[in-house]
Image (cartoon, rainbow, N blue to C red; front, side, top):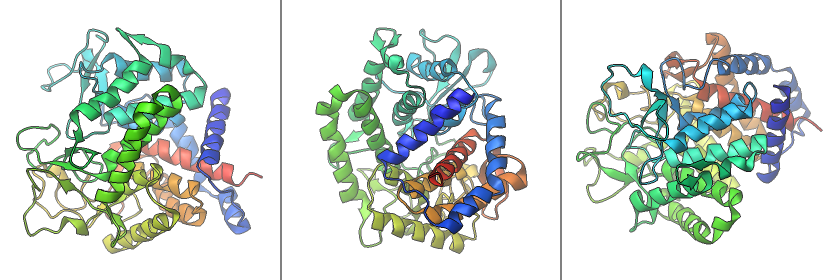
Length: 432
């Protein structure tokens, strides 16, 4: 464990250097970091829950790639690199014939009589997979997770692993080709998905809401495109020979994200850019009043906002958290979509689940970006309520209600992962 912890610290330091993170020079803030009562508790609790497995949380059987991407740094503290690598390779063995990546996998013997459109692969008979096709972040999440694995362990041999008739390197690029071939809109030059609430994977049109179908209203949002930009950055760093092809694509995605999704006047990202079918919501509904917290955080990670725009973003988040009466900047969005706008009951009433629930899983990532961009005081202040509720509830929960009560799956590893990373980033920032 000590070996992997030191590797993790090196990873954080390298991450900080490449993203111009600032050292803490404010002595008062440095003292607060050193004496913070929540830091040791949350770190220890995070390591504890990570020892129990790789599934997303108590309410999930599956290992999800969008979650694993956010706790692989934590997982490296309590697992050998072979375990980290094997979990990644399962996703490649279950890659679709068109290059798409599944959301997650679960042991095939555990699915029993569950009625679901499971995905199976001859290359990986041990597991059954699933994919919520309304979202467009699975391929990008796997790319980012492989990049982090290499940064954490120094093991580039994963790229040469042969899976079927392709290497992992070839499969990574194939997954990006899938997005360009199946999720790219030529008119706007951006990645598309279904209409969802920010980074969520539930569409409004019908009860379950996780699969693209005839009812879907395709749309473009900032989360999918920011995740794609980050993935392309990682691809080109891992495989420099791909720059000739993907560098131009990345540049156009960045430019088009700014042109079509950034609302200069209101200093925010618009929720959706709708395509031929238009919006699924009533014609008199002004969706642009809604502020997307998670997508904004990922856009900052993708380098889409200036320092001035980042400051405007965190100020707006804090303002809207107060208006909502919520617990933290993990708030999904504000104001929430009115009750009844989503057929899936988990999205109703307002401030429920992805419709205004408070998710540290994304709030913690905003903390990372604040630290990396030098907003250390804001990062420290906004991190505290997220840490406090881990202590108050003696664990990590999937999301929190507007009045700060734990909801959803317990031992939610995505939350544990982002908080662990945030704490280590702060600890490194106070070192001379």
